[in-house]
Image (cartoon, rainbow, N blue to C red; front, side):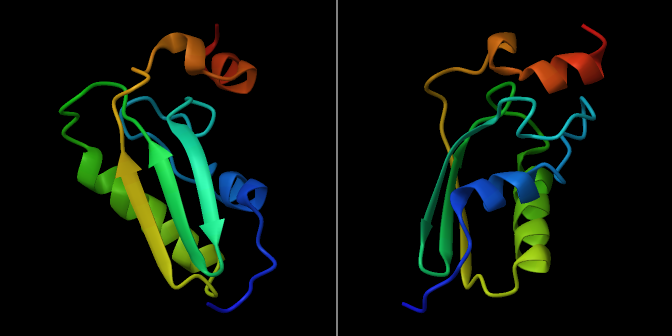
Length: 103
């Protein structure tokens, strides 16, 4: 597998460009991204949604892939693994996300 100079932190930074369509806050500050695993030029993202059965799952997954492939053309694969444990709650929202929400 080819090497890349990308780091999981850079992937997380890039994911800040992906907004949750319902809330209007990026998926990182909203606390939806649980883990980023980068192996060579393949990235696997473990994340959740604010509610099970969220009708916007497909659009969020597409936005994640479009954003990462656009910002990091060296990536050969982006996989999004949707998990429900731990269940998302408002305690996962970052201080910046809370600021954006006016909390």
